[in-house]
Image (cartoon, rainbow, N blue to C red; front, side, top):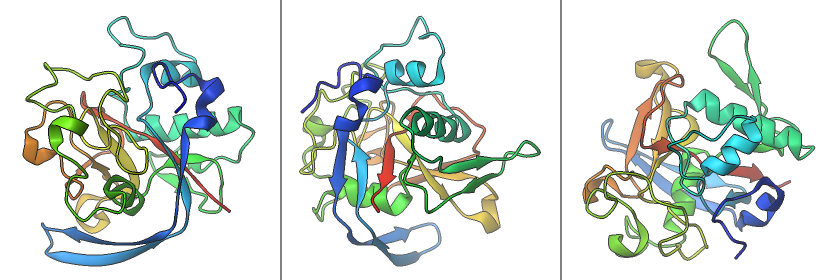
Length: 230
């Protein structure tokens, strides 16, 4: 695999793993609801976006307390969507997200092949990697969480990947997904998945769902990117 120590933009494309299409059963324990999602093939980044990559694409200085190879965190959903658009522009790809100057609402160009966040169904499908259990391996082998993180994020790709070559799907940082969580109850709140460095073991499961306002930034919440395959 290409080195992920800094995730430089120049080698970014080599980190995108092809994920075959399929179907997955999802559930919402809060609503007592289950549904099946059918997925088309897509590309998924092998690691969460790092500080080094984020700073390059967003053209900002690396924060003094940010480890270059650690996953970016404390970024809002809107920040993550803006990153995807900028990375698409840098790669001569069409942008996925249409920002409105009047509000925090964001339109989605579903036909775009540019960089984007994973949908919630894609995220769980990629995390499970063909396995049936809520974790694809023992937690100590795959995740940074409260018992072993020493109170902060850790460099990406230091733990064992899942069977599809994806690192840090559980633990280290939660990951923003594209989907609105429940518009009837929470409005524009977006979903995030995966568990983070501050969570107990039970927080790092493929099935766990959380939500937050798209303008909020949290210190154990980052993202990874995907692309649609035409």
